[in-house]
Image 1: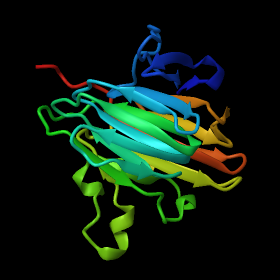
Image 2 (image 1 turned 135 degrees about the horizontal axis):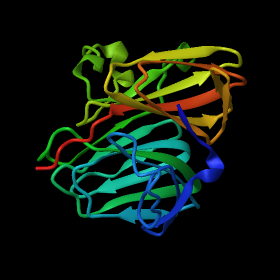
Image 3 (image 1 turned 90 degrees about the vertical axis):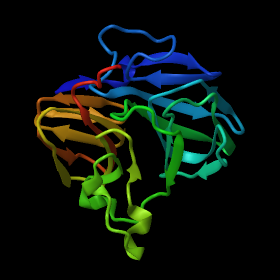
Image 4 (image 1 turned 90 degrees about the horizontal axis):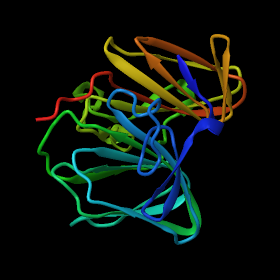
Length: 248
């Protein structure tokens, strides 16, 4: 386990937006923090009311935007704009290329976290997909909110439709958990995977280590993870391939 404390994060200027970055991004470059397996970037942003964040062109990356508070309107080439509220998740899969990617805050501003994941599949058509805040009981542990594993997509049943994970072009997962104080969550993966967990709020312990809001931890060569909440806590966990896809 490698812990990344919140006060060690980098700062990047991108598309008129100031971002706090876990990995090298835009003008923030640090040799010790370039990526975690196929997880290319984890960026935290806050936009003032009606503020904008615009980048591009981008290709061959899945960009997941999880909204912590407020409402953000997302826009990409040739697609209808979508409004994503607090707790919602939005995917832009840039595929063969998008000229412009645009996020605009609503009238109360917005706080968001983005995960950039390298896809396994080349030459896909750009696409977007959104998922509202889950109606599931997140206190049951880690819930899959985005996945590139076919087995994670539930059968098309009416009562499960709202909780189906967003479909990624990478064999990766993004999971979410909201844990009451002194309760825990466990997650099991397969060999050859890297895990990266971000404490959105609260504080947790893993073994004898304590992580606080804004802290993160990377896990390499570990297949079983258990966390205990010291207080009510919300977590995001990325499960990605440890080996990056070969470029052709």
